[in-house]
Image (cartoon, rainbow, N blue to C red; front, top):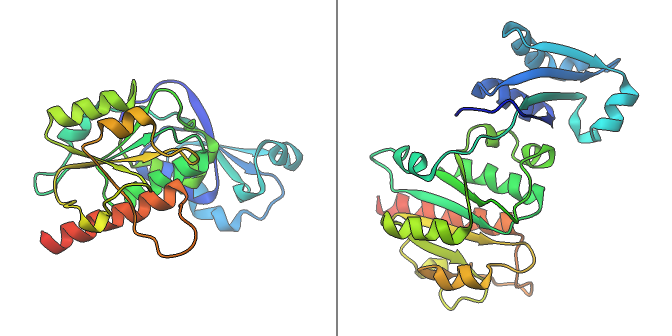
Length: 249
């Protein structure tokens, strides 16, 4: 994955370590001065072995720049470089069925990062986001992804309608997650080439996207609460996809 010269900051031991492990361009490691950095020794050793600059910051400056969840370590890294859709499809192994996740209006960085983390864990071949109405791929999203963002292929499209059209041309079925759908995921055949579309935290799928999906499906629920956090819903849906594929594969 190529990168531009632009940079962002990430923080936390796991994200920084994953950046180093993935070969992502890391410009400088930042550590909080006068802290016991024993918990991050392996990360710092790895950075030194690769000739990456390590800079110690004044604790007050570090604390004003990064949250407590930083664990006293941060890094300046290259920003996300999106891949073309065709490259995502070409990267699907011959013995696997294509699986994509598209986000329709996810504007919470924590949800974006969590969905990226879950997508990587569940073997998603590509995460697709629209150019607008999407949370930034910044510090919060990188932290929530626990480093998965350094490994998960991601594509940016003009809008989700563009992605849906592309899916139809390439024989990929599009399923929108919708709590108001008549059919549950348990009743769907999820072993086919598939793109799951996840709606925004508050409004769910937009009307146009809902109308253009091949079908809509809901996650079966049994309690009194009738809605789920977007990242939780995505994780549950992806687990059902892989359960079916494992069962019928």
